[in-house]
Amino acid sequence: MIKLRVLDLLKENNKTKYWLYKQLGMSYQNFNKMVNNQTKSIRYENIETMCILFNCTPDDLFEITEEL
Image (cartoon, rainbow, N blue to C red; front, side, top):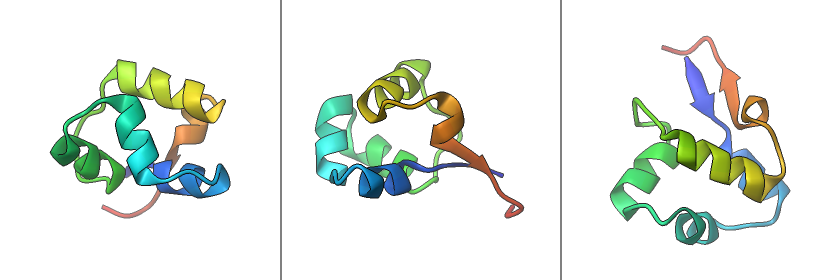
């Protein structure tokens, strides 16, 4: 399973979920699903924005786990 590491990145950068939510401009429902790894897709635009905000690459945003 591929998981988004956004909560880890927020903690590492001393930022809040609310801060990221405002930066991405998504609906709260979609944002919450994305952050909690309950979505099946993420727009490239959002991946790019998160990479810019966290000064990272897409490889840093995601991890592969053995969970299903």
